[in-house]
Length: 629
Image (cartoon, rainbow, N blue to C red):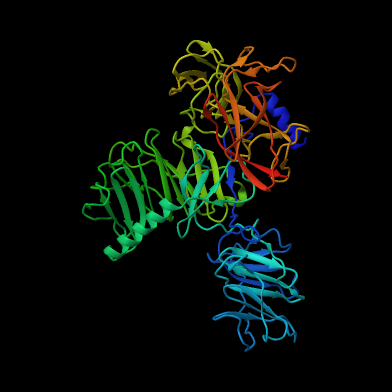
C-alpha cells in the first residue's frame, strides 16, 4: 500500500496522532525529529567539522576523519558507513610542490603524475594549471567561501585530476569539474556536533539546539532538509558569562543554568557555585569530590531551589538552592553523564550518557533519597542503540522525552515514566495543549476502554497498551476539562486541561513529524519532493477548530454529501501574510478531523515557507511547506 493510500486510510479511521507502540505493545516508538545537516546558505548542506579526507588508491572510495576522531567511508559518495573500530588510519599529509602560494599559510595538493595542475586551500580553494604561476580562486563569492571557512584538507582523486574533495568546518564538499562547481556530501553524513537542547516546539518556535560556539539552529515541524540558524542571543550571553566567570575563578565554568533569581554554575574541577540573587553574591563552593567536570544542570521550573547536577559519572540533588547536595547516583554505571532532565511530580530522572539514555525514579521533593536502579531506554533503531547522547529534555507536561544523539540529531519518544501515569495531549504534535470541542486527543501512558467528561461519553477511537485516542465531545461546556477514564489499570480522572472554544492544531505525521498538507487536486502529500506551486489549492488537515454548522455528533465520521463548516472565523497565514481560505469543514469520512483549504498566491521564491492557521483568534502550531513558483 502506498504512503498516500495508507495516509488516507488512517485518517478516515481517525487514527492520526497515535505514535503506535510495537507489535508487542510495550516498546515506545521513537521519532527522528531533526537530521544531522545544517543549512548555512553555502553551496550545499553543511554538518560538523571534518579534519581529513582521502581517496582509496583507485579513487572509487572516500574516507573522512571528523573533528571528533570518528572515521566514515563512502562507496557511492552519498551514503556514509562509520568505521566502528576507527582502525582505518588517515594517510600522511602529502608534500606539496615548492611554489608561490595564492595566500599566506595555504596548503598545496597535487594530482598524481606530472600534471601542471596544482590545488591549494586556506581560506578559499585555489587552482593553478601552470604549476603555481597563476591561481584562480574557486570558492569565493562576495568575499565569503561558498563551502564554509576553516578549510582543513583537500584530496585529489587518483583517477581524475578534476575530481577533488575538501574538508572543513562545514563538512565535506566535492567538485567533479576542477572546482568550477561544488556539491555537498553532508546530507547523509551523521556528523552533527554535540548538541544541547535549548527549547522545544512552542508557538512560532520549533525545536532549537545549541552547537559548539553558541550557534543555535532550529527545526520546524515539516522541515525535511536541514537545521536552520536561529537567534542565538541567549546562548551567546551565557557563553560570555561562562568566559567571564572562568577568568575570575581561574578554572573553566563547564555548565550553567539560570532560573529566576538562581544561577547554578559548575566547574571543570567538580565544584558547584550557586547564586541566589542572579550573580550578585555567591554561596560557598560545594566540591563534589574527584568526579571530573560538572556537565549539566536541571532546575525545577516550579521551584528553582530544587535542582540536579550531572558530573562525569554521578548525579547530585539539592532542595535548598545548592547549599547542600546529596549523591543519588546509586548503581549508576561508569558512564559519562552529559545531560539531565526530570519530572518532579512523576519522580523521574533521565540522563544523557556516552552509552545512551538512562532512566531512574526517586522522590525529588526530599533530600537523601536514593533512586531505584538505572535502566536504559529501549526502542531505538538497532544502529543507534548505545550511541552517545548529548542531552535530554522533557516537554512542559513531562509527557514527551527529547534526546540529542551525537552525530545523528534529535529524537522524540513518549517518556517511559508515563506508562501507568497517563496524561492528555493533543494528537497534533503530541504536546500538551488546551482542549476545544471536537478535538482529537491522545492519552499517553494507558489503554482506555471507556471515558467521559462531565457526564458526557467520550468516544475512544483506538487503544494500545500505552496510548489511546479520544475525541472531545462537541457538546462539552465550561472552562476546564477533566477526563475520567477506565481501563485495565482501573478508573481514574486525568489532570484537567483548560477548555476553550477553539484550539487549532495542524496535524503531524506521527512517524516523522511532517505536517499533513495535501495537494487538493490529486491528494498527494506535500513535502520537499512534492512541493506546492503558485495558485495551487492546499488542504491543511487539522484538529481543534471547534463546533461546526450544521452540528454533527461526536465520534462519527463526517458525511461527504453535506459539508459541516467551522463555525468560528478561520484565517491562514503563509510567512505571516494572509492567504485566501476557500473552505474550512469537517473532513469527510474522518472523525474529529478538519480540512482547511487555501489557495497559494503567486510565489517568486523557491524553498520552505512558514504556514499556520488562526481560528477565532487562536493560533495553531507553525509548520513548513515547500513551495515552487
